[in-house]
Image 1: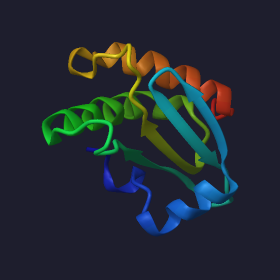
Image 2 (image 1 turned 180 degrees about the vertical axis):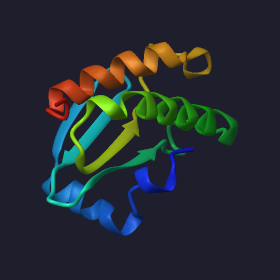
Image 3 (image 1 turned 135 degrees about the vertical axis):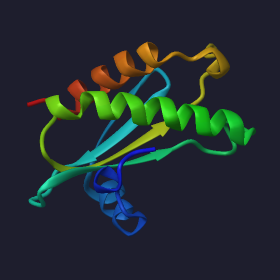
Length: 116
């Protein structure tokens, strides 16, 4: 789980959807909105329609949050980000590894322009 200071409150998510830049890559969709507040906050979404079992949804969330924690020192320090897992037919999410998630997340972050 992400530390509390890195979590985006659900009341702020509509701002990201309304004003944020969007980028899709492989199995992740990301929206980023840079604001003047100090601190980068994240929201991770794994829809129940795409991954039915809670065990698998929680595992995917843990992998994404671990990748976010490892990437945080290299990212811009202000803004809101929403990372959404999007299932593809080719992807077997049960065999997903942290390294795979981290590589895709790095590419998405670079596309959105969050790297410092």
